[in-house]
Length: 315
Image (cartoon, rainbow, N blue to C red; front, side):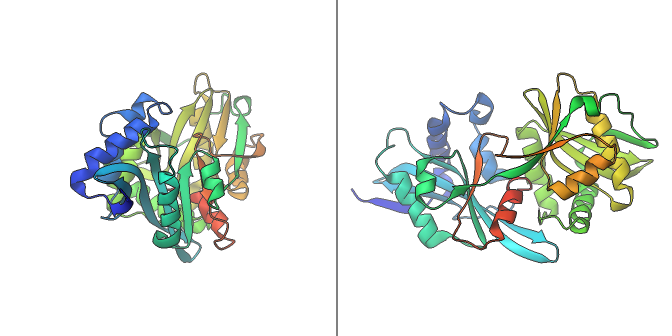
């Protein structure tokens, strides 16, 4: 029977999730394979629409799939439509028969919308053969000894983020990234409440808030990766940026078992961050730390690489 490419309807989402669980069962940890992990992507993403789950079927059997993520991003005063696909998988019972390749070729030929098209996946011949290539990114590494014993600057204090803090974080996020001229996703209130809150929980991020008196002046999302602390995202009010940076590093300097700190930001912005405490650091060009990579179609515009590097951080 000839294969058919279809939109996966809501009543088929359990079948879709089961396919992905079988596909990734040998590669992913148990946290990602809990019962509703993939359905949570759909439930918590306020930008999800019908048509964003695409599958290839043979008869009535779903054999291959991908999920579309669309975001509006801003650089300076310009906005761009950025698109990514993830949760790409072919059922283990049908791998090696060209179904996944056919599905991705169809996506590139007929379904791409926006200025940038990315795929979140492990590097492999399949993606390279379809025109994507792996991107490197700047990564700042701070040896823990450079910030060990760093004391917070008074009167700043920190505490964990609560749901009631999200509006303040949203204001800081937008103001900070616009002031710094950094690419960032346009985040609605529902995006913060549903998508960001879920990702903090699902990916075991620590969310810290920084205050000056009762005023929220900064925030930081971080996690531990082996013996390294990784700052996934941060923001600060421009008027107190330097002191907030100092407080962030002081907060992380006491992390047990951490030997280094990775901060994934453009080099210029990071130099300002680290100059706040005169910390010694080194710059490397490395792949995305999660073990997955960002692959950008090189046939797109030259500035798409800049968007691609940020798409993964602020998605």
